[in-house]
Length: 249
Image (cartoon, rainbow, N blue to C red; front, side, top):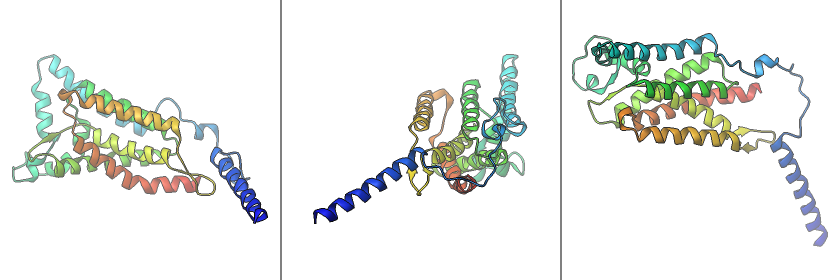
């Protein structure tokens, strides 16, 4: 009986050693794939054209509206909000201002913000998420952005009071954050081991904390319905992207 127990214990020790080695990446198996260039592994500090265009578009809209308010043309923001902000009233009987508005507003709201603080918070988070996801194709990043915006609008439509108004890229940001969070917190390692990386988890918690602090500022008018809808849409769409990235190594 003691010999049997000793054999089982020895096998358990070997298995535990294998698991620990696989977890920290010591057990590296030779690969036939060519090693990628350093430029493909590490991102440049300046975003590529597609993402930079998206960031500049969001910043440019807010800068234009802020300058207009500074020079006494505050009605321009009201006009843009009426035309491009998400307004659930247009889906519940109120006639839209133009024919395509009930469809356009599902995406155009992501380009508008209540103020510069609201815009800068989303813009900074977008840049950080791009920098933290070097495995993600640029086209996929842009697609998830708009999928998150659509999911945020749907979440706001279903959960917010009827006739509510919503602007901002918060849903799009939440969608990208959900994709990044899933990838960073649950990585398939050798032996199909799920690993949690505390460093990135801490960064994620920091972003969540920042969102909660900003939520306390009622002037920003941040809607939890938009964040929830965007996160769910991003997680659902991004699951396939994550599996593809893992398979590609």
